[in-house]
Amino acid sequence: MPEMSRQPSKTAFHVVLRLGGSAAVLLLLFHFVSFAQVWQALGSLPAPVWLAVLGAYFCVHLAGVQKYRLMLNGAGAELNFTQAARCYFTGLFGVLLLPSVVGGDVLKAGLALRLCRSKAGVLLGSLLDRLLDLTALVTLAATGAALAPGELHPADRRGFLFVLAAIAAAAVAAALVLTLLPARRFPFRVRRWLARLRLAWRSVAKRPLRVLCALGLGFFAQLGFLSLTVLLAAACGLHLPYRVWLFAWPIAKLSAFVPISQAGIGVREAALAGLLVPFGAAAGVVVGAGLAWETVVISAALIGGLISLILGRCPAGQAREMDPEPSEPLRVRTP
Image (cartoon, rainbow, N blue to C red; front, side):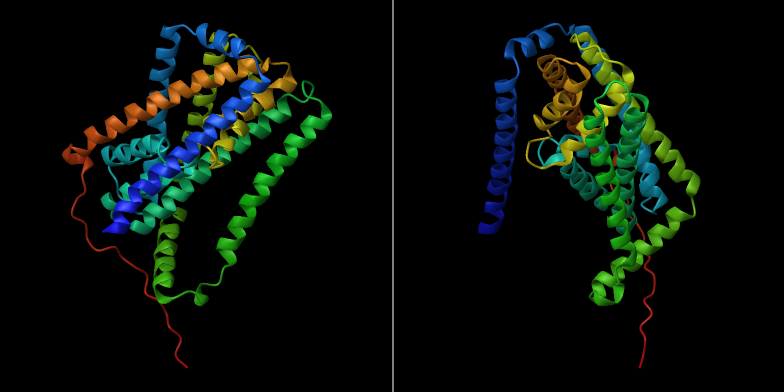
């Protein structure tokens, strides 16, 4: 009982700690940029534009729901659209409570494990879903770097390309570790899970068109979010070529994975300012546009939590009776 009572307080402490991290980053930003410039950028944003961006933001997330469902069902999870939407919007809300974007993924997967047929399918599908998002972001950033070579100083361009190469190398290294890791060294329960994951992977591998469709939805979603950011920034007075945003925005979004702030607030704005200032943007306007985008993201997350609660009361969004999860028989070598 004491352990359970300590758990909520520990979670609250971590939330407060990350909020402090966001506040510290924002205070540091305001030390280097003009607060008046930031406020002016926020004040120049018309309310109808903000509302239109919020509505379009939700529409783009529907593509994210379908991408999420495609990957989990491809691995054998068997979620209907209502269940997938409930899990997805739970994760969207969870970003406000848990560290970085990964925290929302954990909450989303936790709910999906209660609703699905295959737990291994949820774990593998969730991982693949996030990898598709990362692939889309890195590809967009590399495309932007290739399209805007003349607008960036050669030293800055080399540094940014080095960051992209490091991200790609880390992804390849992780894939190699997962592929080459010997399963015999693990306990029986772990080997059984590995067998189930192998079955889920075979299910995904049999449907390459499903993966390509999910990847296309991932590109559509990220380009949609990027375009809405550009629209919102233009309303705040920040006007830059689209190819510059194509380069800087994905890298700034990747910075939200660093779990030192709440929902990436502050870190994302600092990264975006550092990336766009070399292209001639005013740092205060960049931070103001970034904070305006944060209000859209936070509002959508709160509405997403409400949608998840509503879908949880619908029969289609609740768990169904499922057959026991199949598992691949383990071959044990006899001496």
